[in-house]
Length: 343
Image: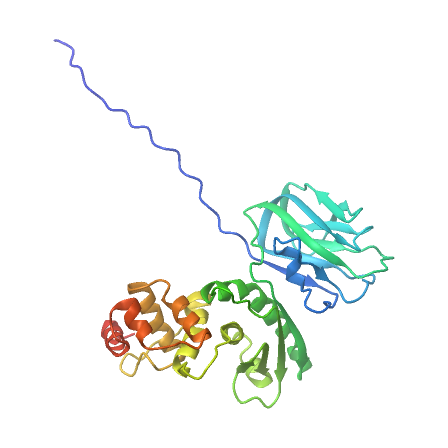
């Protein structure tokens, strides 16, 4: 029997491409009050020209802590600034117990821990005589830690019910952490959002919360009864960022955009059920948020950005809908409603 030659094509599988890990979010907390607008997040914004500056020299027990949402493999960490000499850069595997990584001399400290850490912190020298100025804390890690692109500090300055102070502090940190998400969704050329936002929790407020300028006021009763409703503060933080001008902006859209950020981008699992029979595109809040999500997904992924820019500049017109979709607003509203299924 003659041998049969088989032409075989050997296909070599490409090695699996490394999965790109999303940057890990972080929170920066200090026991020291901030000097003016030299906010805490400037210590981790990737910009040496901005500094976190305290309004007084540190005392024993003070520290500045950068806590990661998840542990990361920290290859190296460094700090630089003024008033730091004699202090210590420390690391923690669990965010609770810390150990020294390196001392700080001549305004800088550098360490290569090469291990998984949940937090790093700077502890000033016990005999520090001047306020701290932290130009930057740098972390080289896997996965990377997200630096603050839109630095902000939420200042809790009034809480009528002392029992709600821990809740207010926690909500403030969550709003700080989510400020980048809000501003990425609503960015426009030449616009700089508020860098300091004041938050208060008051008695006698008949709505869950409201925003005025760069101040957010929440209802003590509401948040005592609904401690899980941090999303309400994200909604109000969005109003702070919107900072719309003029009277041409319809209220249903203003609130719809704020709930688009809250329920489509921040907490989609909490958007709740929709009454298809009564739903209208101009119903405001989370119903309008669903409508804006529909338009963005089907016609123009940047539609909310364009809508926000026009409202921020006082140039809103219904023509924006037709320019982006080719359809009038009323027709889009009908189309969206027809697309709904009972839930």
